[in-house]
Structure formats: C-alpha cells, structure tokens
Length: 160
Image 1 (cartoon, rainbow, N blue to C red):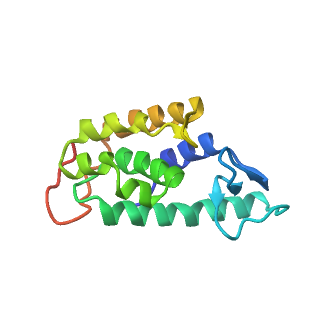
Image 2: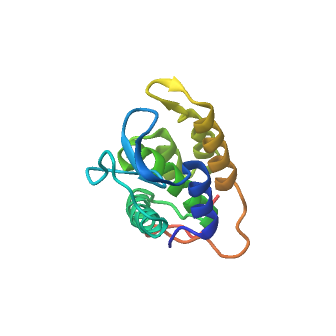
C-alpha cells in the first residue's frame, strides 16, 4: 500500500516547494517539500526533480512507519491522511500518540478526532497547522469506494 496522488497533493499543498534551504517555523533547516535532516545545509539549493525525489523518499519512510505501527486495516484515504501527518510530525510523535492508540483499538472516529490536537509548533498554536490537521481528518474520514481496506497486519479486513 502506497500513498496515492491525493495524499501526495495534500502534502505538497501544505508543505509548498522551496528549492533553496530555509529555516522552518521552529528553526529546522528544510528544503523541497518539507524535507529535513542532516543533508539539508544553509545555502543548499535543489531543482524540482530533486524535490520530487526527496518527497518520494520521505514518503517511503513515513509509509513504512505507518504500516509497522498500525495494527488495524486502513482504507486508502486513511493511509493518505496518516502519511501527511507522519510526514509533518515524524514517526516518533505518531508512535506515542493517542491518535495511534485509538486507531489500533479500532476507534476510527476517535482517531480522526485527534488530528486537530496536533496543531502547535514550538508550543504555540499555528493556524496553518490547524488547517492541515482538519484537511487530514477530512481525508481520513472520506469513504473509499474504489478499493477494499488493506490489512496492515493479520486481523480484520474492514476499516471504520
């Protein structure tokens, strides 16, 4: 199971694409579509193709984390929403979240209600993060009639 074009578009819309390294709202060096890490240095620049490659690599890591942590079936819109969430906040935050605990308990509605609680940066509320979390929650709750739920582990085959 991979992030769909809808999920990628959501991430791209909220991250934006910057081809020259910059400090984000909490001072982390960032480039492309929200790519961070030791490879991002002041003055660094990339082209659009490199930004796309970094995004794909970062999404692969986010998706792997989701599929290893979630023990209930996910529909495509749920994976897409979680990918945006994990891409933005990191797997460690997701692993310790009430959102994940509720999701793994089969409480899909309760998990969805947790998205807006993750709208602070540096301890302060951020309107853009709240908009993103609401968009993620909306996507998470979107019915997916195109495909059945996919198990992320042995267990059920339907997703809330």
